[in-house]
Image 1 (cartoon, rainbow, N blue to C red):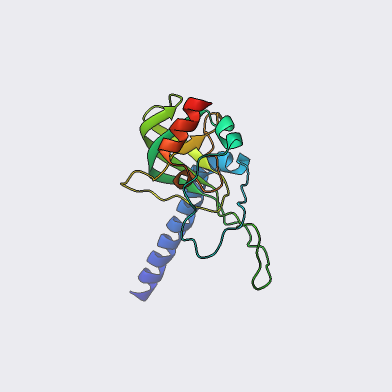
Image 2 (cartoon, rainbow, N blue to C red; image 1 turned 135 degrees about the horizontal axis):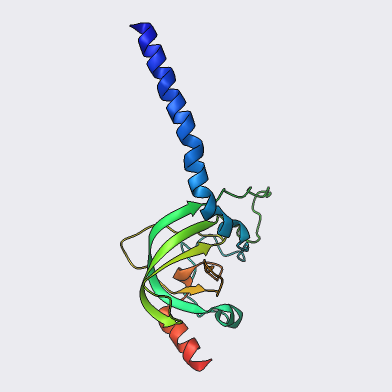
Length: 174
């Protein structure tokens, strides 16, 4: 009886080991746009702020945007590795270090610029925030560059920092 259990355990281990590389290979195509995305390092903000303030987009970010829209994240398709945390002395004041790159699927609720369609797969570069799948629409506006096939999210703090009304006003005046 014990030998059968050991043999069965070995067979299960073999199946698990063989299934591991197939899963990694299926995720490999999603990693390519993540590796090609730029890294964004945001300026330091006071530690007392829970979230960055809602700001109008800076002219350089808005000029780079080919698509602007309000959306929700329906799935996180890929999470890149965490970048190494920089060694910092106590009470260090400086740029906020970036977090991992992600490839996410968006369900577009409202388009402010461009014609993105109803579903988009986009790259969130290494930046000081991460996105999670949600049933609620993301607060703010996703500003996307014109990269194909996967546009990149622009801005230091992602969609939460760009109020849709401020983006619409900036697009109308520019």
